[in-house]
Image (tube, rainbow, N blue to C red; front, side):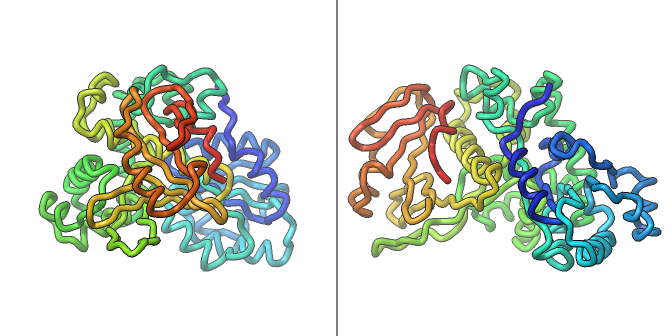
Length: 389
């Protein structure tokens, strides 16, 4: 089953403008499939394969000379030597669309791109499926609990894999391959414990001291491990909004996972129904919304402009989207029945900011879309209708 990806047409367009197009993102987010679909006439080489990797490492010039009509180099971070040779090729011949490169380790890839290919490469990110993409094949679950539990990795939908079977294997593969490759961590069991603790902090302001105490490692190690999660597209951070309106603000970032199914697996949630009773239900729902919003940016080749706002008195806005010269103010509530209490934070911020009601939105656990004086109400399964770019 082929699920059309929003990023596809943009990739084809970028390949007509740049000699190199880079597709980054988590393992199994569909990078290889999308690259092959968008560029069916290109040669395809996986640098995870030992023979291809050895050839590319031992004689990179001859390796690249084999591919004149365009080539997809999958997981290129395994052979960083290639970047300098690709730079030489595109400098001698700046024709567009020569190389499509993919990678699932952001720090390694971006370091080499910055050193060798700056100005020559278009940088795109492919995350797991969005709800909009899932809807195109009529595969949407009926409840947000099912959606959170199932997650968004394409193989789950394509091969009809039970999430309870998919995610433990994904986590083990991630630990044994990506984590070792990025940082050569020897204490994998300690890192896995840290990963599970991080899952319990999703949607929260990160307190490195608390996590250090709980994991039994120092704060420097905790920060390094979070960098690894970020580099391998497991988590992302949301910074606080800087407008203070003469108030003292919280300045630490919040942390979310790119995929909610992965969080559920790490939390030991074994079925969708358990989410309704779980103490992190609200945080999981908030994570679902943030992950969808960040996909809307990346899959349309835009830089995410997502923030949260909280002052030292506990007043908070879950999400602020910087949209051109204005802001979208979003409250996120997992409840399926709309309550006047849902609008408390929005009303406070409206008085503080002086913004129009058109800027305020409530995303909730129900499915009705409503227009009220306080805000536009959007159901969890209608997030794609929110214009953020």
